[in-house]
Length: 477
Length: 59
Image (cartoon, rainbow over all chains, first blue to last red; front, side, top):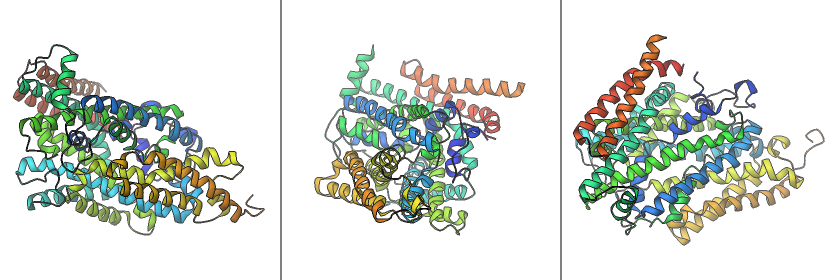
């Protein structure tokens, strides 16, 4: 097995699920560079970039906001996730089980599985837009919530069925295809941006002699900082920076990547996430948003975010192949992981059937364009839902022992449900979502930051009470 | 071994051929239609030549 693929496979595979990764199986820095670059250059990047433009972002805000946000994300991997991963060397699920108990982890699995399902749905949506170019059926518009043509439903069904069946048979072959496609895909994404830039230069008659001219073009025609499209939150520097930081919150602050980075020899290997952030979440997002801005420049009435037509317009068949492969190779492991999360809840169920059902749910979700057209909101929500458990893991690992309390208390006490951790998760979520409901949608992008501190404080306070209430026996001590 | 080396070189050249047209298009030295055709050709060459050696690497 190739080392480059190994961390990803271990994440979903069965090795060292309930034991620390041994020294002999640790991986070098290079393995993580390839994995992060591939994982974060996905089909959904082609939908996220355009949504920045739809949110009326300005050139400075999007460029500097992405640099700052992605840097913060990389630092979160380096300083929050990787140090615990390389010390404990356990999967997130096992680490959580030790802290929270089996029953609470089951709840977490359910939430994780549902979120993975919808995320995979968005990826299927992206792939289906490529079929629209070939078969010329009516595709969803920016503000559509429901499927608007039979052709669209059939295209999603075809993509979803194919992806689900392959995922059910095990996604090893797709992961190999993804490996082969990764370098090609990154270059195609960058080419989108370069081609879009030239198209802008030609369409606007701008004379470009130096970088300053490019910046002027970006400010005046690409990311103009105009009003957002109706029903969209206006994006400022802060929105972009926080979105870039928190869109993978489940993985760094939420600690999902403990399962990946437990194979790292050193904790600084978390810096490898920078390849994914600055190739996928910087260059690819900017490139995709250039294509979308050009589409609006040509036809201001065409606000649809459809990666297929966008890519085809820029790079022809290569663009379409890129959209299909990018959507397919990322939806596949996502459905597979969602299936594994659900299977953990019903261990006796067949993985094949569970994955098929999971794929079917993702496919039905993909038919509703609201999922892809509201991807910024969904991704922010995804991170928010899983974030409190990351705070629990962090506090349990670093803070709890310093307060004279015991870490991994569910394991020590033999309890199935650590209500201190459960309350930290649920109460934090309730506070954050209530805040969004009262204050407005715009705060969804920021609320996870205070939420992390709220979850930490709740867990510390309640752990003190819980550990007194559930004392350890002499044998357990 | 020799075949693999040749395939690796050709596939890397395909990546160059994939990316170069977009730079030439940006510089105004190539038409968009030509750019798209060369990118498609480079894509085919990449998948044909990179798959054998990268597939082997991934066990």
